[in-house]
Length: 324
Image 1 (spheres, rainbow, N blue to C red):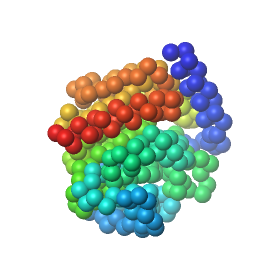
Image 2: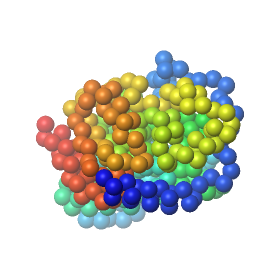
Image 3: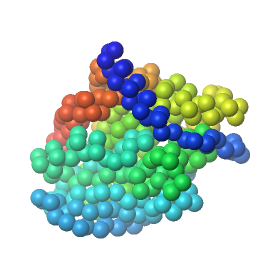
């Protein structure tokens, strides 16, 4: 336990060496999205997804998928969605979408968990989905990947969460309409939060694995170390925790249950996580009626230190869903 906490604390110190140099706060939204309008708020319509394939690797065509986001942020780089794709020659191959964590600059950590095992042993199609304001979607003025996705700018955080869900649903629905195999989504950290929220809206997901996920953004900002400078920004501008809960309620996965069978959900948490409070992870698990869950004896750094175990548990779960 102590070792896990020390590693997470060390990583957090490194994380906070790069932070926003100016307050991100903007005036409070003039209206709050209503929970009764949730389906409309996250609505998707058919969108063309294009592919640019540039090489062959083993039994795979390797390239990128691209489409224009249905939600406009006003920033051209953010509104163009492009990610790596690996398509197996088997037309019936399952499709797995990976969704990364906050402030990640590459998919390296996720690739080290899953990529070679899937490519060498399973032959599944793989799609690496970039969240808003991350990677190539990062605006030129942004200091780091993800700075503008989760911040003290309350309205932009709502809209970037909305954009993430709508973009992910766009990709899921395109795959469902154009590929034969099932669609699996795997989210890590913030990616787990987004995949969980998406699962409450999108009925075409065949299985979900959410790893070291957060649940309530307001809770995370107010109660965990990664959010402390965002909290400081909000408090400086007179925003209370109750204010934040009210404004960000539309983004909470625990407000409703997924549109998929509970048996097709696997949640993985870290008991000593310093990035995601285990109480918040427990809250979602309880709200969803206690789907299958593993709680590892580690911190958030288990993404690296426990990656082999994470991959084994995740892939075995998904393989069992294919069988039956």
